Picture 1 (cartoon, helix red, strand yellow):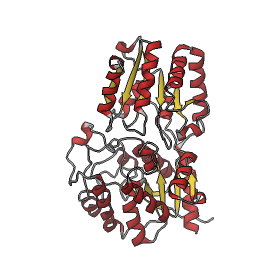
Picture 2 (tube, helix red, strand yellow; picture 1 turned 90 degrees about the vertical axis):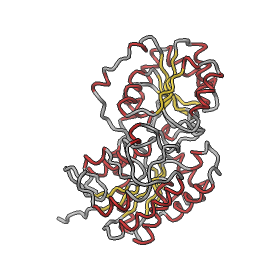
Picture 3 (cartoon, rainbow, N blue to C red; picture 1 turned 45 degrees about the vertical axis):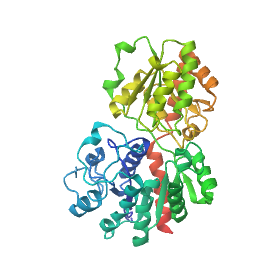
Picture 4 (cartoon, rainbow, N blue to C red; picture 1 turned 180 degrees about the horizontal axis):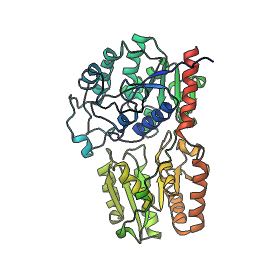
Length: 417
C-alpha cells in the first residue's frame, strides 16, 4: 500500500486571534486547525512578532504537524527577519482593533497600511529555501507577499477571498482604486480562487471579469465548542431587558446606520429593548452621534472590541442578533450567535444566508421591515423557539472539517496539474 505524500502548504495570513480585528483571523485559525487534522503540513506566515493562540496547537510559523508546543522553537532567521523587520500593527486603521492586547511592544514601525502591506513582501527572503507545494493567501492584504513568493518559487497560488473592496466600500465596485488594483492582479495571477459564498463568487467574476470556473466556493464553518461557564452566565442589571446585538466593524459595509434607524422604530414598540453594539471602526463616533440624534442614546451601548469570552457572554444574554450588512461575503458572527441559542436576522446580501435557510432575512435598507421582524422575535415565543431550532438544524452541516475537505481537494488538483 502506497503512503500518501504529505501536502505542504505555505499559508500567508494577516492576523490570528487574539490579535484580530474581525472574522478574517478567526476563519484562518479554524481552517488551519481543520487542515491540520488531515495531516497537512502548514507553514503559517504572519506580519508580526506577536504570538497567537495557534502556537499551542502545532501550527507554528514554519513548523509541521505536531501535538507539541513550538512557541519557543521559531526558526531565528524567520522570526527576526520576516516578523520583526516588516511592520507593526496600526491601531489607527479599521483593520485592527485598539484592545489593550495590542499595546504590548511590537517591533517595527509604519503608520501607513499600504506601506505595511507592501513591506510584507520582504518575506520572500525568509521562504526562498522552504519546501512547500502550494501558496495559500488570504485577502488583498497578503496578495503582494504571495505574488512575490510565487515569482521566486513558481508554485501554484490559491487566493482565498473573505471580502472584496466592493464589500468594504459598502457595495461600491470602485472603492479604493489602489486596493482594487492589488485584488485584480492577485485574482488574475492566482491559479485558483476560493470564495466564501456564491454571493462573493459572483462579485469576483463581475467586478474583475474572472472566469467563474476558476472560482471554487468554500463556506466557512463554526466551532462547536462552548464555554460551560458562559452557558450559565447572567447579568442581573439586564434581567428585564430585551437585548438586540450588532457585532462587527463599524463601517459603511456593516450597515450600522441602518441598524440604529431600525432600533429607533423598535424602541417605540418595545421601550425595554436594549441595543448592544460590539466593535470598533471609523464610523464609531458618527454612530454614537446618530444614536443621540435619533433619541435612543440611553438604549444603545457601544462596547468597543471585546475578547472572545466577553463576546460569547453577549451572545448568551442576547434575545436577538442582527446582521444588517450592506455587502457581506459570508459572516461568521451569526453562526456564533446560533451556537449560543440566540436567534438571528440577516441582511439579504449576507453570504451566510446561503447556508442558514431558517433565518429571517431582510433588505438592509428596509428599516421598517427590519424593525417589524425584531419586534416579532421579541414578542412571540413560538417564533423565537422556531428560529433557534431551525438555526441548530442548519449548523449541523456547517463545519470547518467540511471546509478543509474541499480545500484539500483544491490542493490535490493543483498539485496534480
